[in-house]
Image 1 (cartoon, helix red, strand yellow):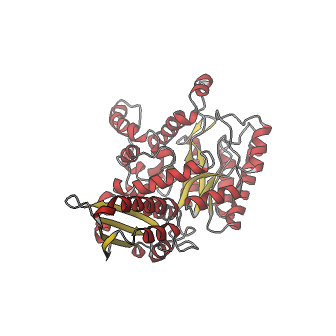
Image 2 (cartoon, one colour):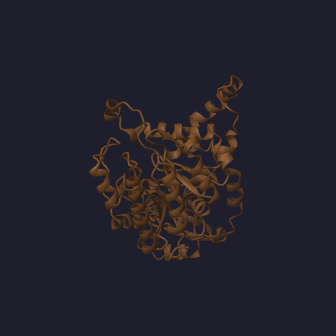
Image 3 (cartoon, one colour):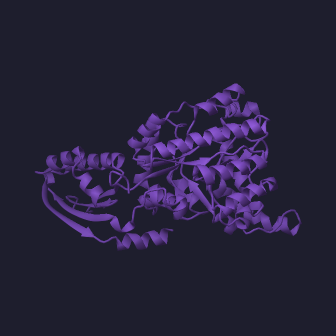
Length: 432
């Protein structure tokens, strides 16, 4: 539970771009290595975005490019500075930030040392790994010592796409990496992990795949279809694809359209979906609007907003994230009869309060309005609140008071039915 009494929404995909990191990147002339500028960042602006979007906790990770320019000692030093800066932010703003440490790959020995220090000493909440570190892809046998260390600590790995080790520079100038190649890059890295059975051999690892699963919903069925052929011809070893995929989690950063989410649910389950913003790579107003839209659309997709925006990440990262119990949810049904000649005006008020409530109140999970087909003046509103405090906060807001006062003479009768969300619980089990 957050300090305000609302359920804690968690952003698992955001970046801290520290001064020491940027100085190092600039000193090596790598500001445009990924084909587009690294955005500016400061903690005050990040917190302001979180507050506007209703995000209680953000998981910080290092952006691309990987800070490696041929010197392992130098790279280890910049990763250490970065991890210590994130640890300081986590301590300075309790409950607002978690962080996944960066490690100086492709130097595996130094990466192991930094992972141990970050997880055991700094209290990192996981490790961020690039899809490839200058040609060393996730799944590479060279990474086995690091995987063993992370598995022993039951670590969360946040994967993030970086520029492929071989890429057509003209092509990425015309078609930015982020629009296509990042998705392909993530897909090839995760499939390489699956092909090497990494997540079965290291069963305590949990990997977060970015950007709505990238191309995995398309690639995994093809991979599974080809696997028996390749094994039969001696080109691959047998692997348990389903067991590997079961250890994957998926953030919804990027274009989380309804069709994309439906496709993603063909390869994973609802309890492995997580909210991600990709701040500061997208402007804050656009992210706020996108998150509001996502929250409103999730119920129609058979998904619980509280799970996707909060509980799934809380279970993944553990006790450092505030806990919200399902039993606290408030679900009500309002049965309203409207004066016929004032129906149009009432519907405008209802639409406005619903839109503003969903956009600005994290504790308002759903406000779903319906009309009786046989009698349009009979309106039903399904109201779902994260908890009692969220409901009480809602009815004190200016936009609710405007709706309540403005429609007082439009309502012929009002019946409020408090419910126990047994049907919702059964439905969500089936959806998962």
